[in-house]
Image (cartoon, rainbow, N blue to C red; front, side):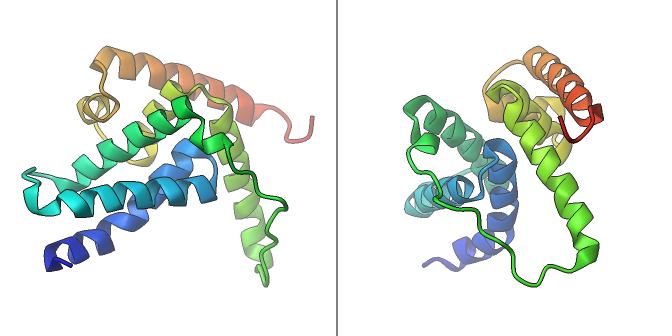
Length: 162
């Protein structure tokens, strides 16, 4: 393996995994999609001539998630049971509950809105960078992010138990 790719992998894989989880709402599907993107990058690494491989990988991942939705990849496999964390410290229970609530709210957003919100506010990309990653115009990103944030706000301000 190329030493440059090893270095890239060490820095990019965790952020790509977080992005994939935010886009899909499913840790297992996110791992599969992230691995697929990284394998494709490794195969093309010697031929790849881009200024920012992290941005390129992020764009690949966003498009891979969109493709997997169209082809039904994310809905093929279902976990048979929830994994129960062992030894979770009580202080993290509230944080985990809030995180779960946010992920559940993100899952309810349409894919374009979810992509816009995740890339703009979780990945902290500019409108132009988000538009490039999503393959659309800046105006589309602004509208999708606005609608997505309104929807999240409405969902997260409702009482937790309904």
